[in-house]
Image (tube, rainbow, N blue to C red; front, top):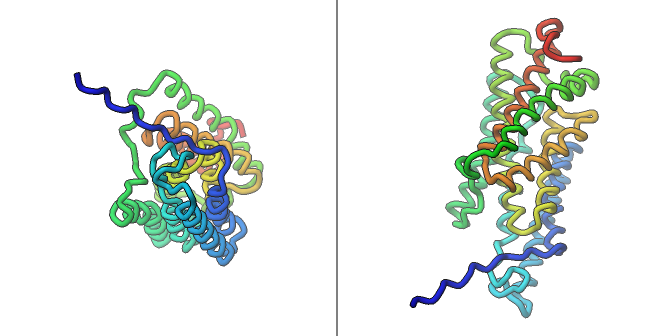
Length: 297
């Protein structure tokens, strides 16, 4: 009889590793770019993170246990931390070249399209055709059929958004970070813009940043790091005041949901439902009396 195939070896990631240091430096570039608005600090953090990652990988390669037979990696070659962090760095650099203030004119929407699109496309192209490691994937059909809990969570997202978002946007005044939408054309542009950015969020923060970090770190570490990048972007986009009290849990939940479902379609659906409420709240806030019967605030 033929011998049974050897079981696949499972990579066991260490609870703590010096590799966290360069990853943290790279991810801290996001608040430097988008919260503190200090570009040179972001560049220094990105460069420092990549240099430290290179030094760590060089040390590991020269040590008694090379990456090919590292016990911490279960005998499987580790992915290159330098390469994966460089993909995140490229995406952050591309996004950082534009002002993320929400605007709805043709030039602003084109600028957003090129910068945000490039931040997803360029790392993917580098990973796929330069590094040839297929580290970035977009599993639209992943996860199989949705469970009853997943359908229930979609309803809960709408309910929580309806309850929390009007109070946040209107009482804090952050709705003023978005342009006035008082004509059908502007309302339509806002609808497209909010939805497009919501889809991009999942393509970049989850399928790019989180997926790359997850190759090196345990779930909670990778999820926390991607949340730093996610929340920093949303801050400059307009979710200020006490917005991080909402965006931090949202970013962490999206990473958790993606890990459990392996479905980009599902996390995008969750995000778009949430953003649908955001869209309606912004229309309501800029047009008193139009949707007063829909919200409590």
